[in-house]
Length: 143
Image 1 (cartoon, rainbow, N blue to C red):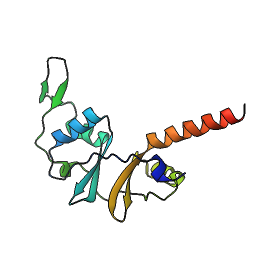
Image 2: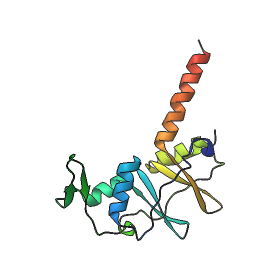
Image 3: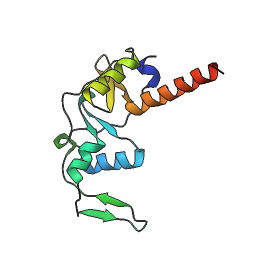
């Protein structure tokens, strides 16, 4: 199985100059945990939900809506919390290779680049879903 078969092709991203509030909103409303940072369509970093939680911490400066939803306020830019030197993978590489890289490096996602352009992202969740499907298919075939 190849990375391109498992990767998410609809990619949300931010620029290094975007405010951390935008990062927070994307994580919250799009239910994502990894966010590529692009500058002039080139991958320059990645932000995980952990990176965001480290920055926001138990802060007191937030807005609370009547329904109880809270939104943090931050003037920081994405470039101040992003990880640089992003490990990537190609769409034609094996999904097993992606899993091995993620396990070895203890990371939860790999941006997928083709000819230097971001074309997707593959996460540990994508790989686990494929593993569950494969396991179920094998179990069904054995009955």
